[in-house]
Image (cartoon, rainbow, N blue to C red; front, side, top):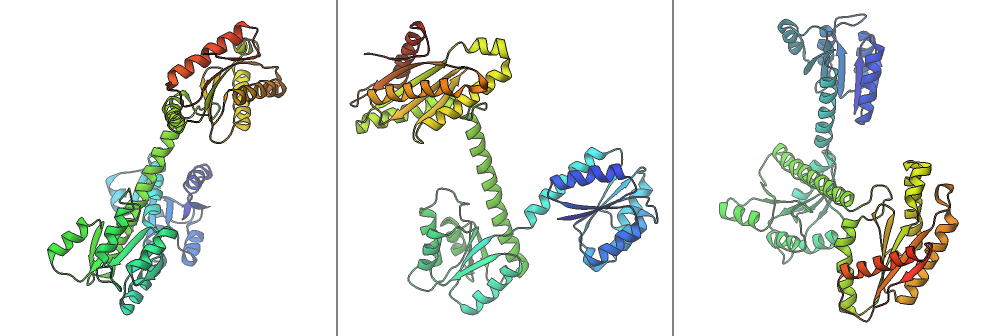
Length: 426
């Protein structure tokens, strides 16, 4: 998106330019109205912010001149003024101004630019469409119309060919004719696609048909299609339906992404980026159930940094945080991808190791203990006490009990002088 700012105030132009850049808008700031008009004659602009009074001409006359340019008919024009009386507003709107803001309402102006930019991003949709149509003439016309609107189109003639492509590629929309080449109808293709999907907007489906029977239309929608389009519909109607379906898919994906991000935040320790105790108590019982079902050993290691309070007291909390971060990086580095590594809270870390027997768990804890001494996080000599508990041979034990056993072993390590590994013995 491109924007032009025409105002004699350099400070205002800088502020607007910075905000526009944050919204992926490319701004150009000018002070002369005539210079701006010459540039607008040569290149289209999506947004123009102009002051009521310019160095060389009146702002309203400038807007009238902009609207007279064929390439600027759809340009969004915002006017800035120090006087917002009814007469000014009327003249500005008649000239072709879309929005009028007083210069002491900058927050409202910035909010408007943000809102406008988001709206434009949604309207300028590009996507990949799979079009299933067996009539060559119809397929050619519709494909060209979709490509002209900025879409990438792959066209096939049968439901079988469509399913093959859906297995290997991602599409933003599936457009399906009701009658297809081969034994599979468009309705059957829709049903087959929906059988293999958990979400209706993973592949939005638009069915095209010349069927006039309302019952057929209802059947199409009930089969899993998101929308229906009569083949005799205009180009504009087709594009509205296509754009709406793809826009809804994008919004759905955005919501999904935000939910996944929130879920990740809820299960992640913000300081170390390890899992947190909430994730641990959700995932660990599942790991234990799997171990008991398939009869493989698991081990739990609890590591508690020694005398961590004195680090905070002597060196400050920022240094303490750095120690925790570097310890977290070390633990992640020394553990396998399938292991659960979590910061339980404070200076306590927990590691759940699958397919790990007692001897292996003790070796792992000892190697971490030695590596931590060598690491010297935040340039400090830091040690930890380790407690190890194991579950072997498919023994029936819940996670809380296993955790309690490892915790008991940690206390034993502390009492026996710290900087050591202790095993809980049943």
